[in-house]
Structures are given as C-alpha cells and as structure tokens.
Length: 412
Image (cartoon, rainbow, N blue to C red; front, side):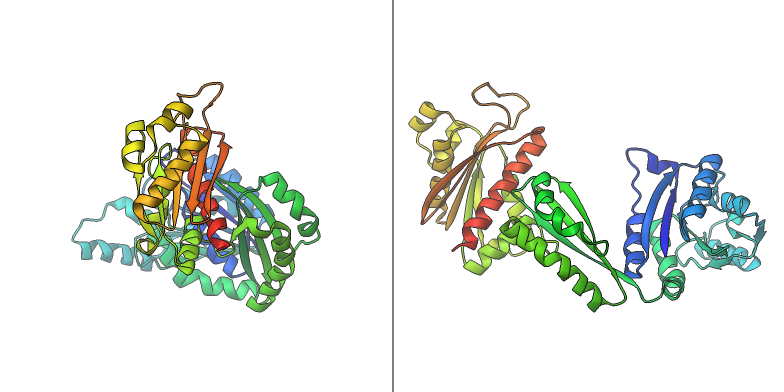
C-alpha cells in the first residue's frame, strides 16, 4: 500500500509555516508497512487543490489530506473532495449535535459557520474528533482510501490514533517498515558513496539514501518486511558490509549525536575535558553540556576572544601570540595545554580561527581554524579550512573538535 499526503493551508507556504503533520503520519504509516511516496503542500485554492487531489488519486491507493476542515470560507478540503469524487455533502445530525454541545460546555455562542463542519461527502464515514469540532472523514472509492484529517496536530493525532490506525493495519496486512541510520564524520558525501555504492546498488529492499547534513553524512537504510525479525535480518545483511566499508568513520547507528557519543566514551574511560574557545564562542562547551550527565566529564571552559584573555585565562604566553598571531598552530596548542593544566582535566581542547565574515587575509583566510588537543600523551594540532558562512564555520569547528576527542578517547 502506497500513500500520499496532501497538506492543505496557505500558511504552510510562508516562511513561518511548517508541515509537522506529515512527519507524524509518515512515521505511523511506516510502522504499518505503508510507504509514503508523495507529499504535497497546497494553499487554500480550490483549483490547485483539485489538481493535486486528482493527481494523487491516479497514483496512490491511500490519500490523506490534512487541514482545511475548519469553519471558515477558506477551509475548502471537504468541498474539493466531494466535488472531485462526485459525492454531494450531507449534514450529519449527530455531528451537528456534538458541535452544538461542545460550544454549550464552553459557555460560548456557536457561530453559524461552524455547521459547515457537520457536512460529510455522501457515503463517507465520519471520525470523531475528541479535541475539536472538525471530525475526520474516511471514504473509499474504486480501490483508493481517502482520509481527511483536521490540521491542528493535537486534533489530527487524536483522530488518527483512535479511528484510523486499526483500520489501516487491517488493510495493509502484516508488513512493516524498519530503518537504520549510520552517521558518518570525516568523509565527504562522494567518498561515502564511492565506498558503499557497489554494496547497496545490489539491493532494492532495503533501500538506501545518502544525505549530507551539517557536520556529518547520513546513510539511511529502510527495509520492508513481514516481521521485526525479518526486517532486522535484511538490515543486517546490507548494513554489515556497509559498516565494514566505512569503518570508524561511523560514529552512530542508533541516532545519537556526536556529543552524546563523545560523552559516552569519556564516561566509559573515566576521562574529563576542559576547553578554551576563541572563534567558536562557547559552542563546543554548549554542545558538551547538552548531554545529560555532562557534569561527570566536562570540567568547564573559557571563551577567550581577546589576546589578553588568552593569556590570563588559558595561560598562553604573550610572546607566542606576538610571534605567530592568535590564529596559529602554536597558539592552539598552548590553549589546549594551558586550559588542561589550569582545569586539571584529562584532555584540553583549544580552538582558534577566523569565522568571518571579516578578518581574513590572503595568508589567513576566513574559515582557517586550528584545533589543539592535549592529554598525558602529548599535544596534537590540526589545521582546517572550513567553507561556508560564520555559522557553518563555527559548527564545523565544534564538530571536528568533538571528533578529535572521540578518536583520542576511544583508543585509551
């Protein structure tokens, strides 16, 4: 069973609008083995919604429309569906009574236009909405199931859970969809694909998608099977050789962030970390302390933008800054060693760079970042040239620092 979701509402075509309903529905449908093949966002326009709905009927055997079931003139979903399917709208006395009683309980007068919500296409089932006045609607036509759901998430979810899940489960059979996500750091998207394309192209089930995210690459595997056990076998059959091909560049297979993985390693190895940040402005500290239990491995840090504070707070020799400049390998090393010593941490991290948009020179361009790591085994400093704007450069610097910690602590 393949599904299509049509989100109705002009507000979702603005910079402030966000269609979260389709994300919820996709997860629930996948758990039933139903693949979502198309998603469309349509404004409150009769002709455009008509075109989108007609196209969906031709290519999908489950069409879910969200939103546009309210009492106002721009709520047109039920009218469009009725027109396209040739099913006149009929007022359902029970729905009308429920709407009237809801307003009575709230001690408010009911505007007459609320009665539009009591109208349902002929032959359709209406679905009770415990959290609002707009009922859902279920109808079937020529082998296609059409479901209309209210747009507010707390209403949509209540209707879907109570009235749709069990019916869809019976229609979809025993199939289910399970997924696995590999998060990779240290390899570009093209290199990830070069390594694993000979593996995943031999499979249609599971399917494979490679996504470039800020600071990482993700490989998504999706298996369709009759049982959880069968799905896991399929995911292992494809996933095991992918893991071998990507090796230790994979930092997560269970959805963890890199900072969560680093926190886990530090806790397991009973190590602590302190940081001295310049261009990242405390971002690395923020990411580390976002992990529950971070007080057990993060001792603290300093944001030392000025040269004076690099000297006072992290113990960087002033002569070193004068000789090499604040953005340099020696200063990054001194930051990591100084903050480690002053905090009494197992590991010290020093970050210095030029995040832009100004401040770069031909010798030291925007995006140049030095990251130092110091521990009992000594210090290592790496030089990076990160692309993008100020936000991306700062994030990449914090991500790379976390990856340096992960690799260092893992080998203890």
